[in-house]
Image (cartoon, rainbow, N blue to C red; front, side, top):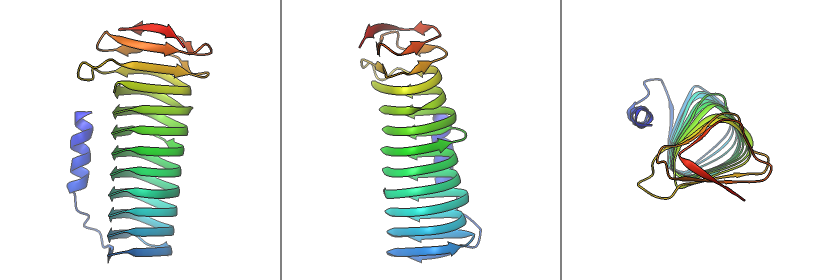
Length: 223
């Protein structure tokens, strides 16, 4: 996770040298195909196709395709239909229909219908519904996930809720000595192992939940 933090900060401090279309103040753009967009101020974007997009300020969007990197410094108030390679945000986000290769965020993130081909790295709370994560999620913060698949999960949190989730392995790191509880609900399937590093974890397991691997550092309580 420390490597992610330094990498993310490095991304934020890197200035693009490519020729950019730059906007200041409230900006509304629609039906644009270009290479690089930089916006300093509130933005409302519709039907945009670009290679790079950087926004400092609140964002609303519909139907975006960013071939390389999208970076937001500020809240993403409402977003629908995004396809991009690398997505980075510092600020809260609430969106639907997101498809990207890599996803990094610092803030409270609420997503519906999410596909990430590789990894997700989150510092903050994550609420996801109807998702497919091709590789791993690493998160420092609360996690509530419903109806999806994850390869492996590494989380530092007191409360983790997985409902109807198919996952391989779960590692729960120590969280400042706090009681840590993993809620497994619905028809969740853990194919691999669950490991509470603290050795003091609690798993609240629903009647239809399956755990195929070993449990380390936790006791199980039926829901």
